[in-house]
Length: 292
Image (cartoon, rainbow, N blue to C red; front, top):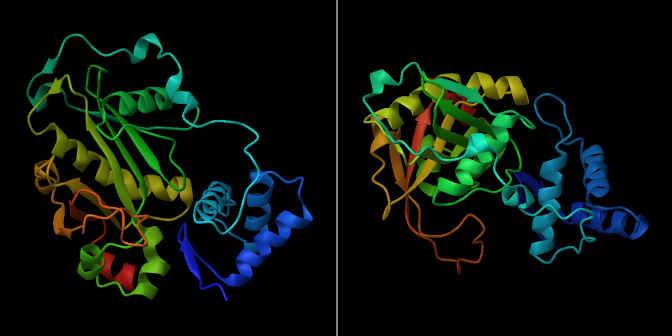
């Protein structure tokens, strides 16, 4: 008997896996998209706005295949990083002159929500890919990105939020989560997966100020896009690379450290760098909302 799995925040039973395999046998002509759409319909898997979570379902299927539970048909369209290989438009080119100033000279900052298919999305993706030490790849699941410009319209930074880590001992203890509460409420938490001040921008206190600007609007923007609010934000800061100064200055709280494992390391074999865990509450009653 197959024990239950938790993937993409959804618990899968043996019966769920049998359903996926049966659909594949009965509909061999289906591609990955058609299969994911059918699963969303059967599970009534929707976001807060009532939209089918098709991309989450496709990611779930991919993870099941990687773990050896199913075998998927070949993708009909190869899209692995293709957008990253496109030649950047002139407006994406790096600036030759550094921005070396005090914060007051850049304010007010323009914080723009990055919308799918917009020119800002291409610019946002390219800047992260070129200048963030982790690079950037297509984001799956609920996510929001912000492109930040100064008062003169010059790009100065990028901020990206995505799915929260499934488990994190320090975070879960600080919130007061048991397993049941975490599984039920994880969608009210998001992860600051990328934060970039562009390398030619040298402005003291800009990073913490930018984090504050984004935090004040993040929950409302999430509500508008996904139909539910966010009550807290987490991030993971590599201990050997960064000190987390800008997060502390923006009132984020250090709640622990990781154990040097990746989020996909279920067999405790994959080693990773140790990261400091920071959390920011967006609602004064966040514990009650996360633990109810």
